[in-house]
Image (cartoon, rainbow, N blue to C red; front, side, top):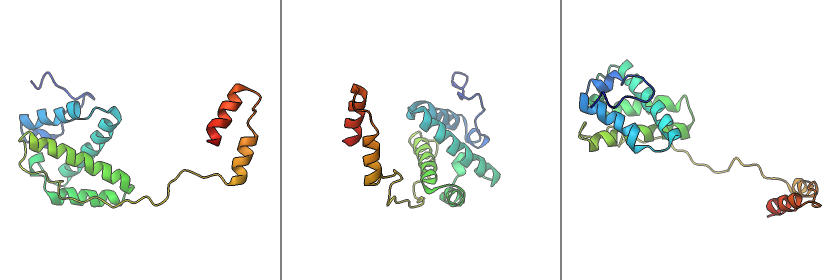
Length: 159
């Protein structure tokens, strides 16, 4: 079975995953192949999971089954010092989703990321710039209404 399924990138499975056995390796591959349909999400989750598992290996965790909530919390805390809160929340979502998949596949008993809280992120003001009334008037007046395209553009913008 493992010969039929290979990582799309050609990379080998992380050592921390293979240390948990063949079932863990297969389930790990299935997570990326069957649960995440959007290729951008798959790529982002792959980066997040890969970085987390590499960090776990560096800190002495030898198997994905040995990951504890303290490991996840420490990594998330480290990430909050390096990247923006929305990115950290996405990374935590990737880790939670992976461990949920491993729990449902009976590779591990408990999701170590389930109890870890991510950073809070509240958007109070959007990033979309708002035109001043004089700027809006200048924009509308600059559109040539002598053509159908100009009429369409003016109608869309004035709406």
